[in-house]
Image 1 (cartoon, rainbow, N blue to C red):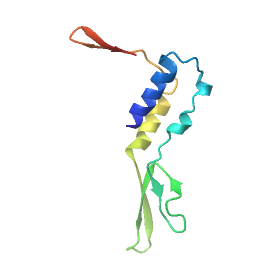
Image 2: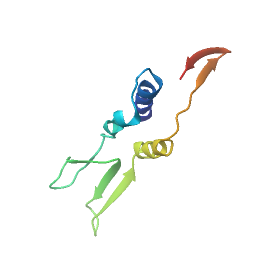
Image 3: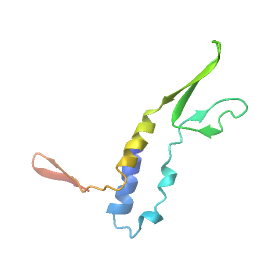
Length: 99
């Protein structure tokens, strides 16, 4: 879903008929807003791309962080940042989409 939304913004702003520059597009608004760090006294106040698991039944108590798939997606999109490809999609010899 993240990739779909980011690509739709890129297509609208850079491949449509919008006279905008990269500075005009606020891609910071496309952040991952789907997770929270939950610990006292800051329950649900900090967002993250990591899942936090606190294990209370062990000595010493410890916390494990697991990267969410969206973390990898943002990393890969960051590596592709300066690239924009023009793609033509064909099905049985007929062009069905061009971007």
